[in-house]
Image (cartoon, rainbow, N blue to C red; front, side, top):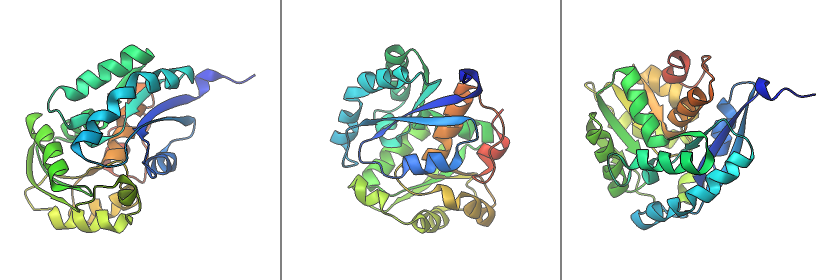
Length: 241
């Protein structure tokens, strides 16, 4: 007879066109943790699409509750930050009310990660448009963290973003970095970034945060997993407690 208590189940809400998030999460999941996914409709990373994506959030959250997940994360930065400070908390309340499970979002997790790292001056890079980058940066600044600079690659199609090589994240992270930044943030859950986190941290001498990394960090802690996770940056290695 199997023991349900021996396994943690993570619920992931992700955009329907995301092709990298499940792969990155499964690369990093510790033993004894399983991933369970529901998809929200989104093809392009633009204001209208990132607004519509949350229309089905209650329905998909209830489906994850059917799988008896321990916690749920909406691991999408643009949709969870687009309406400014407090919008992420409203989304969390919707997920928790519908599912009866604890929840978080990528934007919430990013701010929490910066707080535990003690980073209040950062730089940010994303694969999407400059307008989306500016919106995400505005959310971070409204949360009390100064964004010293940000750069974007200009993609709108989420499928195109999913095809980008991880070296694009390494190159853009190095290009946007500056000596007075305390951390580098690589935003967007469909951008391959996990494989370059340790390399960029070693080169820059500072923490590197990615959407998928902070999302998994936050939801693991909500679900009760606090053991260090090695190989994917300082946050997961040193701040799981």
